[in-house]
Length: 301
DNA sequence: AAACTTAGCAACCGCCTTTTG
DNA sequence: GCAAAAGGCGGTTGCTAAGTT
Image (tube, rainbow, N blue to C red; front, side, top):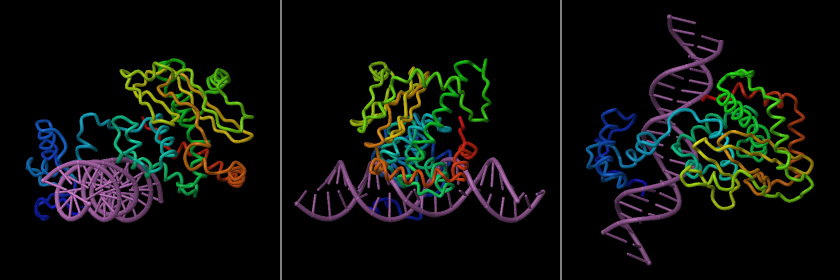
């Protein structure tokens, strides 16, 4: 079981960072023989590493389809959403982000997201933190997404918003909101209603677009190619508030979040949540802290 | 410029599950 | 059916580069 990796005597095994030669050796061996059977691979290849180490190096670093570089805002958004559903199921989350590894996502969560939780003195596993993500960070990420997409689509011609200031393009956003008006769920509905997404019908799910289709009961869809036309997201609902942001011209296609059905936050009753929310959002310091988070949160792209 | 701190990330560890003989 | 081996996963550690004092 745990000690199954002693195919070579311990002092013969190399540890620590991989060298270029080792990488080449591993790549060459896998190219010729394929991956899997990691322990025998480790022996046969001549690498003085454990099978586990070889597997990890391949999956997290050497595999050709690994996507290097910073997570895009839409990837971050997806991670936040999926984590709120699945918790620390990094591998499962990574499966929804082609080219990203569980290790990378885990590192992102620990270094970025948990940092914010610590900063706000909120337990990152708490319902309150989940709510914070949903209510504020995700829309902010969407703003980023929208800014990015509009700046790229207009090819910097009429770009009025600087990249360093996360200001919302109010005209754009309000027009979006107007256009999305019909999608807003009836706030009188006590039950969460899965909103029909008009853009999700066929094109996003075509196999050649590599569209990721979430598991059953999921309410998310995303097209990693970035050629989808529409993105709808974040109807955050409680009994007197119905928050909705829609974004056009981007590569995500998200049906509204279902606060009652998704993740730990769904366990919190509305009155319970309102009390909690009222407690902390009345705190001006905390609120301002929160809104200064763009300085903490690096949208590197 | 040096010392110190922080952030990011690759790699390891240990446990659990699955596969194999 | 059982035990051992292998694979997989999440948590943690340690190193390095960048930033700050």
